[in-house]
Length: 215
Image 1 (cartoon, rainbow, N blue to C red):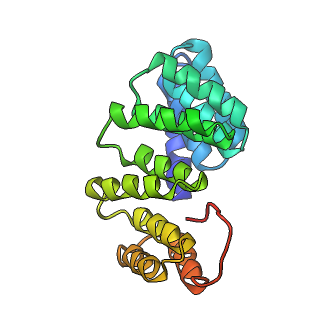
Image 2 (tube, rainbow, N blue to C red; image 1 turned 90 degrees about the vertical axis):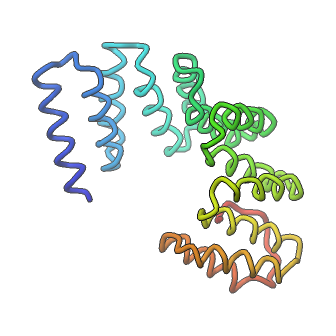
């Protein structure tokens, strides 16, 4: 996989060399640098794109995603705002802006942004899941379950939905329901990392724990 990104990066660098004002080539270089976790060069590529076209929202979004990963939430919020101002109908940008707001503990604003993201694209399951996650962190379990039940209709094969429901039932000491949903999550063959997390939750099913972001 790394070689694929390295090959793609070389191709996009060649495109930049042939036409240094090819905005999207700079942005694509940024994406590949990020995939290789070379954030410094990723930032440089996105900034190069914006020097050519300040309204290239993909570059603003790319920068925001780097800052989000680096937990520089004020920076990420600012850059997502810039991207959203240019592309105000993007459900994806709204969702990640909401994620930044949530990280800044501005939960009411985050929920409002998730609602806008859901309305902007009812087929995008991510803002619904993020909304449920925020509600769980706020201990609004009934509202979170309502969102997740609806989300199951849109994403019936998404293991993380069932895992989060299992987590909620665990907090409520409804262990049979928690076990059922953890089992359903495992049946959907999640990633190895998620499998380990879910199995750990099952092993600690009867041990009270604090709210966390493991699922």
